[in-house]
Length: 170
Image (cartoon, rainbow, N blue to C red; front, side, top):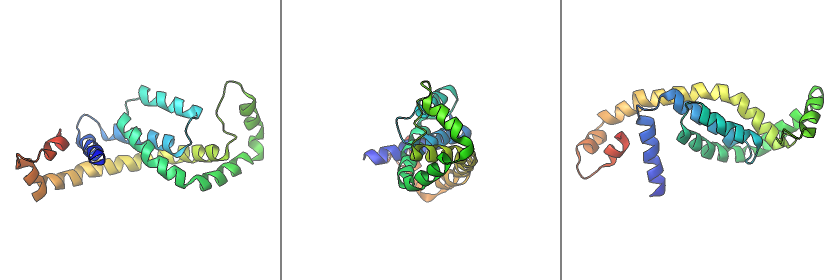
């Protein structure tokens, strides 16, 4: 029943007029960055403050962290190879040495998985935000409209015993 409640809350969030598609996509994008990268890193604290400062949806960020956390775990070997490549770049060695020796920056960017996943997620973020935005708008325009007009939607809307539609509709 716990998974069903989360699904209902996700539908309510997607169907809500209180949250714009950009707010939902922004939260999902930040959640993607946080999910793809290993936990307990300094950039997670910075991204948490970004979540609080900007008008993005926190629930979608949590969803993104969960979904992309699983994806990030599966792609750890790829992130390791990419991070190893990045850490071996000759023109960046001085910068990496300064980061490593700095008492202020506690980033752990000398970790190959962290470096690879962080850079990959930062590079993916401007690509994925418009994709998330498109998918959310598409859902609201087509899927939600189709469901409301479908037999099942009409049945749930008019049924007094099933309050599922009321939960989703909010």
